[in-house]
Length: 137
Image (cartoon, rainbow, N blue to C red):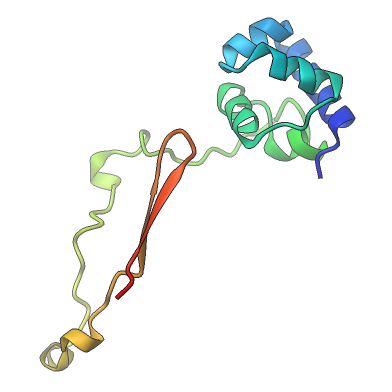
């Protein structure tokens, strides 16, 4: 659970580390200055959007340290996950191509009733939102 006063201290530590004022910090992460002020005073808890913007802009900040003080800052080794932009086209799987892994006998027995069917598709957008499509058949 995020404690507002402790979070405010960690946020202030980030500002000090990077030599930023609250205004400069708000501009860096493209966030409302008043929100930063409320977080620094301990009045409000951080939103998911705020946390994600901080983590994206400042790679030395670890999620668990930022939220509950566990870990270290600045991070000594940041484990980075591959982003879609970092992968090359040849590395991306073709999601619309289904490989057949049935024996010849199984192929003969395949009917529309026992074919694989899509249950749901989830599309994630860069702004953090998503859309889920369910197969109601």
